[in-house]
Image 1 (cartoon, rainbow, N blue to C red):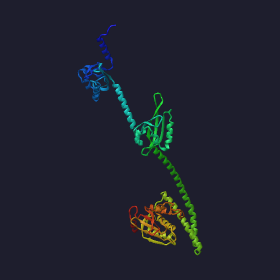
Image 2 (image 1 turned 180 degrees about the vertical axis):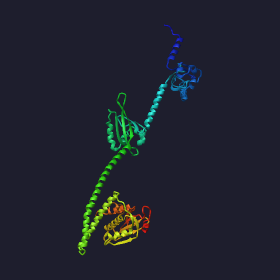
Image 3 (image 1 turned 60 degrees about the horizontal axis):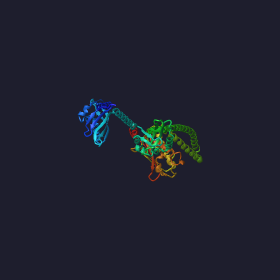
Image 4 (image 1 turned 90 degrees about the horizontal axis):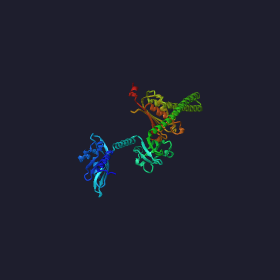
Length: 509
């Protein structure tokens, strides 16, 4: 066996170093100055070994500025007794490109432990670092997508309702922080709406692990008490062996859609009810028209016969009295039918006033004298000339109903006052009495249909006709307490025509 010469051993070692896929280097352990750099530096770093050996700071000067301080500090910290450094940094090549290197160095000592040299290896990790950067960028983009999308994403433990992760949007949706959802005690079951809790807990426990997906809509109670509807869509994620691993899902806020759907359902119900009401209203109109025709025909006959009896037997007191009663009740019934029909026409908007210049004072006096309502009653009149442009027939109906109301709701010996006067706001008609009056809480509703007095006083539409006819003229009707006791019913009718001309001037013309 022939002995190997030191020269051949050195050549073999240099060949081995040259074949390594990296830069082998050696440095003085006391100064840190490089004493050897392998030829691979040309391929990896772009510079020949001589460049690193001739200038003591050449290596440090060509490290990327953002990494230089860290890399030099790590290198110097590795100098010493059996020290090792392992770091990654960017190195600037002559063409301006950057190469990422992993630099591993170790201090070699003598038998006493004193440092001799530092030996190391630089390898190219550029691709791995770029892969890491791309992966980090993808993760950042994914996180941005997840955390900025208008939905809450989550990961659920497979066996419990505990959230392993939930995106920050949950705080905007429900007011709870992600930390409150990911605590050991599950929060989700506690904030389910009571009406949905049993269904959702049962659904959660029975989640199908074979289909790998689930979708539900339910309500949760937000931290501030709001009710929030969510569409919960989850997918079962499996591991490499195909075994169920965890649930991954999203919550979409569908509160507004559910509210819109509820509103649409309510509107549909209301539309149906409105259709039913229209049908009933049409039936009522038909009924009123039929009743008015069927009632008025016999009423006309009764009234005609009563008047004939009064005239043919003027000296027969009993006959005349009965005929008078028949006539009075027939007229009363005729007024009730007329009021019902007028109220129906007003409600359908088919009544318009036929206005003309009228002395309301003279009209009120005439109606009071001719109606017969005040026969045998103590009445005080205070009536002034009051020119107003009105529908005379409708004002007559107003006065008739006010007088009939006063007589109906007062005892026979109670006094009645009739007052008409002009004013800057309108012609003012007042019919007052010293009867029981109208309670304060009933003074508005008394003008509503079928709310006039108690049930024994009639159907209660006379005052409604008064109010509606006053409104047709642009006026109003109201009641208050008469000074000294009783009730005072007021009607105000405008004193000016629509074009602004004073009606009194038209009378004088």
